[in-house]
Length: 297
Image 1 (cartoon, rainbow, N blue to C red):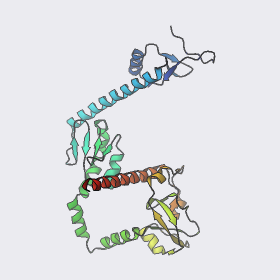
Image 2 (image 1 turned 180 degrees about the vertical axis):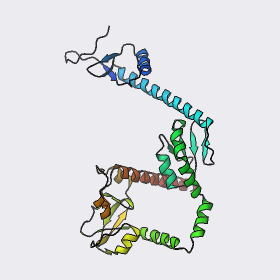
Image 3 (image 1 turned 60 degrees about the horizontal axis):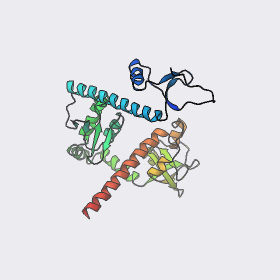
Image 4 (image 1 turned 180 degrees about the horizontal axis):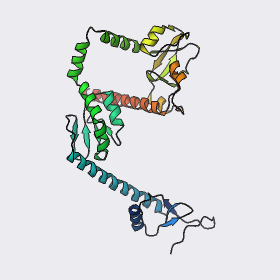
């Protein structure tokens, strides 16, 4: 009979431990695969002796995970067959759902919240495994509505309807302002330069200022509510590169009310993740365009 591994330094046992879920079926299957395994009260885990124990345990866990994924995929496939989502934007391929829509920031944000969803850059579509069907169904109304809003003919009709309206002029003015690559900050509370900074316009890198004063009306109209008795200056800004964003240490907590009112803050992890995704997507797009140019050259 195997003895529980000793905690004394006299003769340490060679082997590895496995921390399993506390369900009878998993433990039973583990014991069948590792008959020499013994429970260790001191380690609070199952101990498997042998020099290759760690590798064998890892392989067994991977097989169990793959089996669980296959079972979950089968359940999702059955749920879809019983109550399918019927949409021109969704195809139920043999291995996974395929989602192809016009570009929409809402669609991207919704699909990124679905577990295991992946962007296929070669085919220009999203894949979602069947095991994530419940979450896909929950988010599908928002995905489909955003896709329909961004169909080319719908966007064109919307632009035609907006022509000459105050809304159209306001949108054009905002676009012109954002193209100036500047941002207002309190003259007495400048942000750090050449570091990723959170703003009402997203995470950016501030590069410097010449001290030009910012009109409070412009600040309030295009950026954030300007505070009374605060003088603002313009600072130049640019998007952060992926390398800069990855190496930026996030703030431990989200910005407080005072920082939001000020207009800039140190970004937290969620803000940096969003900025990194944008930078990564921008890099992939640039690489794909370069490859297409090389292919046609």
